Length: 195
Image 1 (cartoon, rainbow, N blue to C red):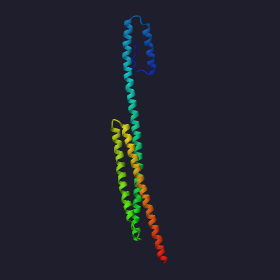
Image 2 (image 1 turned 180 degrees about the vertical axis):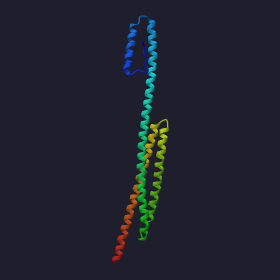
Image 3 (image 1 turned 120 degrees about the vertical axis):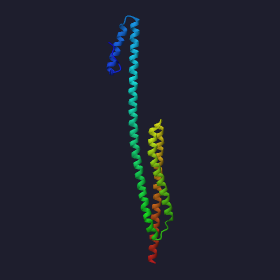
């Protein structure tokens, strides 16, 4: 007469429990009450164990999805960072290529070269940080406290972004220096040609 609660749906469980309550109320002896309570207690423990297992599985799946989402977002961020690094590198190479032309015109390029060395050092630093983001992300997923580890990854990403911003700012200063040196040389050569 008593069915197994473990495999029953929620509605079936409610029906089974209602039947058992009615059985207890209608039972004539205390021995029957005791047996029914023990049986119900055992079934209740089985149901609780199965629902706990189901909740654990749901939590594990939700955590997997969160990790996959965080992993995809980190990959996108790393790709954007690498793209920004490549863009700054190309600008730096273009300026380096134009230095020979400036030197042939007689422009002093020592400060520009020093600035480019600084930019290249910052680019190397940004590349190192970008690679370390990927490694830190994998370590965060493997750690026992992934939330705290992911916060450390966020800090590393912000630090890398700031390094790229500083590099780009330095590169803008170099570009303005090149333009001012080129304009000054053009003005002085124009004055020499008119005299």
